[in-house]
Amino acid sequence: MTNQYARSQAFSSSWTWTPNSAWVNEARVGYSHYYQVFKSQDNTQDPANFSFKGSTYHLYTGQTNPLYGGFPGITIQPFSGILGAGWPKTVGPDGVLQVLDHISYLRGKHSFKFGGEILSDRSTSNVTANTKGPIRFGPITTPRHQRQVCKDSLTVCPIGRLLSPET
Image (cartoon, rainbow, N blue to C red; front, side, top):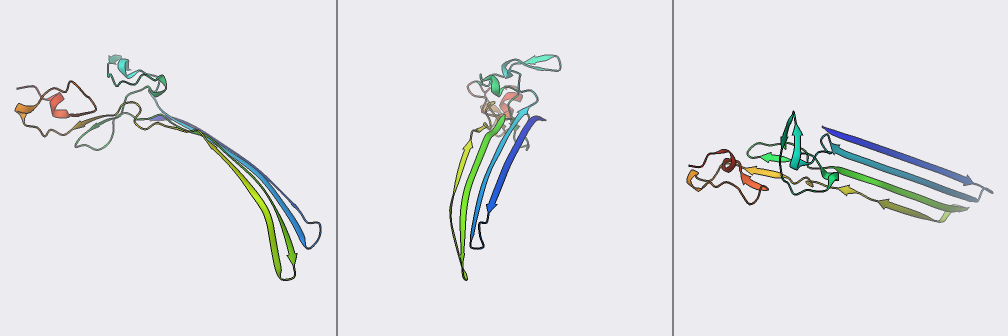
């Protein structure tokens, strides 16, 4: 589950002036703005001290930025799907400003159009896939006598190495 916030705004105006049957002037201005934030329900929790149903779990992902808190995404192979969420994601604020002016001239069977258009596009995004430190457990593929407990890295570790007792 996620917390989402989105806000979209738009404005436009146009003006057409026809001084006579041969000349037409058209002017337009418009602006659009968009901002959206996706956060997981647990985004305020530190994964190193993660509280769940009265217990505290310690999952050291290396992520220290408080904006990227919460339980990381965990994948267990050969199953599909992800436990947890790998983002917050911030789209925007984006803004597009459009200004244009065209003058048209009609002469007999011919039409001439002159003018210009200015587009100003601004975007600030914080797309942060997997910032919480994704963890992937591989399938049980190694022989039992070669299994070792993963001590160096939690990023890719066969699940059998964590769940099977050493023999």
